[in-house]
Amino acid sequence: MVFSSVSFLFYFLPIFLVLYGVLPWRNAVLLIASLIFYSWGEPQNLPLLLICITVNYGFGLWIGHAQTRSQSALSSPHTARLPFTIAILFNLGALLYYKYSNFALSNWHSLQHWILGVETPKAGEAIALPLGISFFTFHAISYLVDVYRQKTKAERSFTALFTYIIMFPQLVAGPIVRFSTVARQLHHRRWSWWRVEVGTRFFCLGLAQKILIANTVAVVADKIFSLPKESLSSSIAWLGALCYSLQIYFDFAGYSLMAIGLGLICGFSFPRNFNLPYVARSVTEFWRRWHMSLSRWFRDYVYIPLGGNRHGLSRTLLNLFLVFFLCGLWHGANWTFVVWGMLHGSFLVLERLWLGKVLARQTRLIQHVYTLLVVTLAWVIFRADDFTQAANVIQAMFGIVDPLVKVTALSVMAYCSNTVILALVCAAIFASGASKKLNQIAQRRFAMTASVIDRAWLLCLLIFCGVSLASGAYNPFIYFRF
Image (cartoon, rainbow, N blue to C red):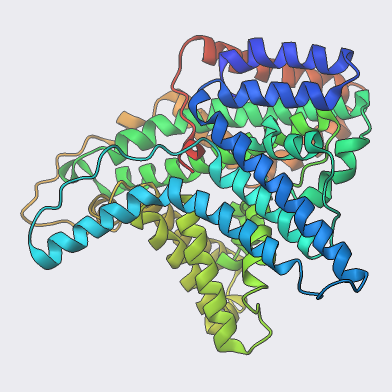
């Protein structure tokens, strides 16, 4: 189940909100609702999730108990290191097995074929990827690390920890919420109509971004990326890259905004996940604005433990590159994701070395063009099924045409219906931050009726989204793969 579905919007969410508002056992209601939400589409993976949560609850108590013993001088100050190490290996082992086993076996077979020249028989069925395993594993690891570092106490309430990891607003696609951020709210959270109103506003805006923008441009992106090489002109290739860049942003940013809104409605404060990344003037700034909770996770739990910037420039650059290699691999078990991460890591390294100083002397327009060019080309690699497809699209974008291939592309306008053009205009307004300025102008000009207009606008968006879903319009969700 996803937020942008009929079953969630018209059945699951209304029933949940009524029970959550009426019954006094809010953690229990949220926990049961989250179990139903997760098992709706993949009930076969529910036992794995329950085992992971139970084991991590036990590890947290073990680490906390060891910390208490070391503080009372009854044992070595490193007593907690053993349970912590076992716990991290358990979580990483589960992630590696379910997410990367197929990838590793496929590459092993390819290597054998390349070296020995023989086909290796496939070993049984592929291992299915459990829904949301990247996110709930990262939540569990952050909890254990914070307990080990004594930034938070081990949670003694099984229900509270269970609720934190399986909480349906952030279970499937984040944002990645630190346990220390919501630990107090799991036991005592403030619920108010103001939070409900703000949360509803966030949810409606996120839903509109997902359904009305991301889903619309996704149709164009999917059509163009499925075209054969001879049907790719330069303008069509650029349109496909642009549409996918907007699709992945509004798909994920919209979903994150819906999660933050649902969190507010339930009394939780989730961290912001996106801050207009496409207005960035460097790749470094882009990553301060894109998927911010993931960037902070890698910074605090990978980059800093590796040494961060404390051991000289060479080590800092190596740590940066390694972090983005892992970031690419986290997004999916495919070499295209790895190269995407390495490409971003390479540009961060170059900006640390000399490119950042060169950029600082350029105009803002050149800085924006550079950043958008790097990010867009990287998205082509991210989106492509393989490197051949990525190369075809990138070559077409820059007019590099094989003389033996006759281009038979349609006009770019064949892919730009009125709905697509409207979605692209709205995407530009939201992605550039112009929507905030327009909202401020409206607030000043219509001060007396601004709140009424705002509510009417949100209601219209909700109606449009409902009509789109009811009509069975195209409704993919990119981050299901991750």
